[in-house]
Length: 255
Image 1 (cartoon, helix red, strand yellow):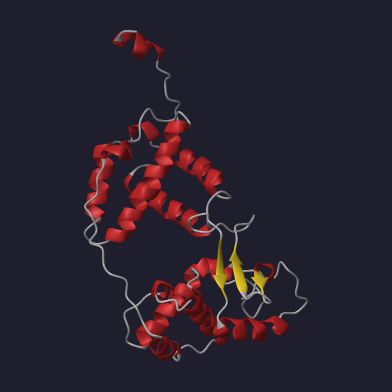
Image 2 (tube, rainbow, N blue to C red):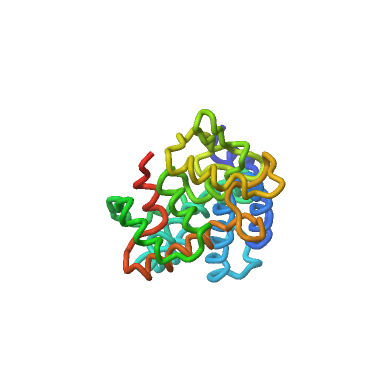
């Protein structure tokens, strides 16, 4: 088949506007992806809509324009820009699969590399000094749970009693209809002495407990939001004059 024949037989991409594609893609990922990833999608499309009209045809969003937007943002927000790039590249890959685009414009873009910093580690004593500035006892439990288990914050906040095996002192980090782990893999976490005591003390306090109850909830028996917990931890860290994030407690897990 010659070149002209190939062009003739090539399937023409369907039209869709930027805002309509965002709506369709967000509906597609709503139940398939984690809550945090869906927030990344919302933020990333927000960046696009700051630079393009919402009714811009998707196939008129070019690599050159996208690269210019990302490169301009990169110096002041390296990690955020890299997240936007990865998120939109994945979204536009789906647009190609759905026949809205003939090719992915992000495939032609290469961001500068971000220097890799070594993880920061803190000791048990340092963490307890930091959280001494926290007045809320439940939040203290969350911070210490992260430190002693190595679980991510979303894993802790979505943990249910049916995932805890007291006799064998094991926690099962599971995927279910309301939560998916970051890498979509399930795993087993051993319960050390601190976690065992904390969970035992928390268990009787839960009213009308059943297997679907969350282990850690607020005073209204509602699940905490991960971004809210991270913000509260940041305030505690500032009060303690430290420079760490909640992820640091995961890196220094004593499990």
